[in-house]
Image 1 (cartoon, rainbow, N blue to C red):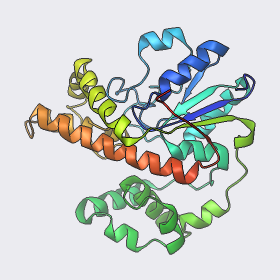
Image 2 (image 1 turned 90 degrees about the horizontal axis):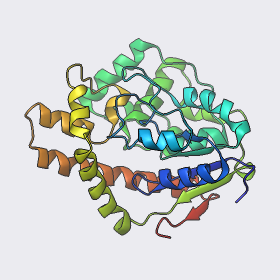
Image 3 (image 1 turned 180 degrees about the vertical axis):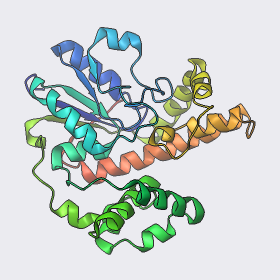
Length: 284
């Protein structure tokens, strides 16, 4: 592996990608840069599996926990921030496939969504689900997005409503990428389900032991499920437990199931969008 080129490490949750990133960064004196859409928020260290304070003391880390929980942070914002690190051959690691796609394929320069349109989308989705939003999208956009992902569906709908152009048309006008795959060491951890599932279960138990419930309690007073930061897996379940709506064991089970489903979506994305990346087995 080149020590002069940036290293990109993608992988499903609980696959060990952060440990690999730290190992490479420590060996080469590089900075570890976050490519996870939830780990940017300051209110979830334990529940988002952000690097610990000890990890941060051992190796330099960037773009972790630097966004306030009430803020909306976009892939465009991440792309602007990551640009300043590219010349230093960083180790960029995370599970948000869209971040890596924006970096290596380019990002369409779509105007920001007006707040009133986002609020309209929030109301429609809360009242009627994804159906009305999907019904307004063009066939090409539908073919490109994850139709089971509420945030992706609503984003595509917001682009259509705000600009009068489908998301697919904006994507077709995408500028060149900041970093070509050929100019980086691009690794994707190929974690089989039967190996990953018990790790997911053990990790959530470890999160509970390390203070995930207390972390959720700190977010309870002004909890807003519509915030992007509230999409942290396990957060809605632990909040429901704190409100007396389910037992802790039920919350644990629901969060574990949600994590497994999320990992499945991640693996599907990596298979379809990162076929030119090097597959690495996390099992050694």
